[in-house]
Length: 377
View 1 (spheres, rainbow, N blue to C red):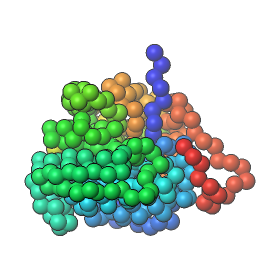
View 2 (view 1 turned 60 degrees about the vertical axis):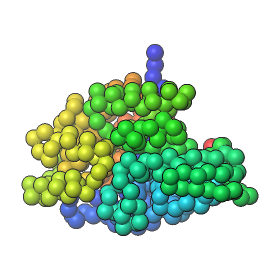
View 3 (view 1 turned 180 degrees about the horizontal axis):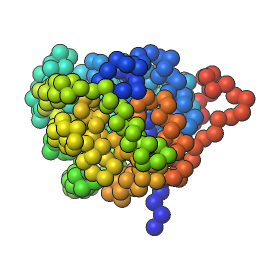
View 4 (view 1 turned 30 degrees about the vertical axis):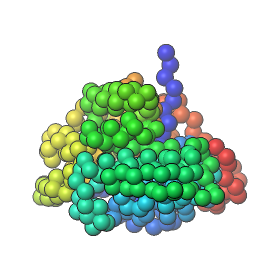
């Protein structure tokens, strides 16, 4: 049976970009002009959406999505919603507003975890599993408000007394879709209860299969089914050899001392099960970076978050992606350094092999100009 084309998303580097990891050489700041260039490019190339990261080193995703939505036509914006940072009622009203501003193109990425020191700085002092209890309560209130317009709720951490959404609801019904990535048992329980799409970072297919099977089973207990997505970097070139050369160039300015310091910091600063799984894939060793055929962990030597990339020719990378698709993955959230040029490479080289339609640039239309209207989804 022929597999359906994957839905391909891209990444907006709201903390900065560049051609090399772990160095200021070739660094590009995350200014709105550059982010606009990427968003407009991926919108026109045929990517389905963009992920906006979150954290103290990133520009605020809600602000950036609000700025970029009027400049794009079809692109969906996967924006972080962080339980414990604001009240669920305020978050519901903000979600409805951004969904309307974007003409129904908002997706919400529920981010419970992070670096404990950073969370504490923002006033969230709960331990790992307790944060997921709070997330469960938050999403119960948030979902009820957007679906029903009102809710009464009393939980361990949160309460809402005769809470009301107000006049404006979201365009997407009953609410903008919820996405979520969490590898711990507590996180998977939240996914099974509440979300629409469960995300995993790039790991060997056997590990991804095991994780998705657990999430699938926990959702089935609730009578629910989930969609699944994979977050991974892509390094695609015309040949496998060229792709591996590009991967090695990406980390060519990293010294052993830089890698050791980064690995120490990454382990000390996290209680994320998913982050620790990424670090365990390579143990900070340059000679252990191909952890599965064409799955390369070099990005994770110094980068927080997903640290793996699929490396190879269009045919090779497509074959690896189809292995994940066979496990149930429907959406790929991809990235590459630098993100503007790599978006073109992925669209031009990989999309045809995957059967993803690349939208042509219209002759005579100024690519830099904002569209005159936003097309309805």
